[in-house]
Image (cartoon, rainbow, N blue to C red; front, side, top):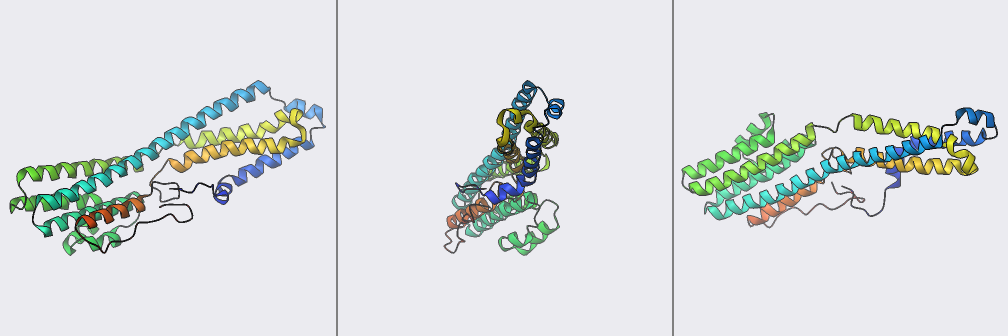
Length: 296
């Protein structure tokens, strides 16, 4: 997630530079042939058509950007809920039972669940990160599971059931924990839905196609009115449309481990710190901080 107040122009130009250069060269060509009035008249498109196309393109880009941002914000809301549910689980584990070993095992399983979910959403192997929070048997189960977060959640349920059977917690406390496990499962499923259901591909193809078409004809429409500054006007308008298009592209998948994503690593670290401190531990890792204006 970008947290800097200043744009990274290098990153922006890497994403839009090639098309901007094309628009610039095309508009320079329009200026150079401006004296060939008969040729420009042959290429002329009614100005009202270009105005209508520009307005329609702006609406399309705004709709696409809003749709992409809605996915990004839902992902951030889900991980905000994961932070809250993790704290609730740690509070329940430490307050329901005097069995400190049970509380520690359950809290460590929750920390492993959070890290495993982050890695699963980013298509990264989780085993190195979660092994330190699991016993050998549980680590082996998770390594062989196709869905490691779900396997950890299953182990959390079994751990709570075992604590109920040995009367470390009563049935009511077990039900409260089970409700928390269900909330965690719902969050995991919603994140997987966002990850596995991309924005319709038409939202990628058509806006960029229309931007190219619009900016290809634009210099031939405005050259009579603005003359030598046609390249400047064309590049500025093209830049605005391309940036709006890139905003939508960058936000549409919030779990891709890019600078534009939800900061899963920072949120995972926050949960780990909070839960370990709730266990009374003092040797906890430091929070993640932005690197070059980006919080991962």
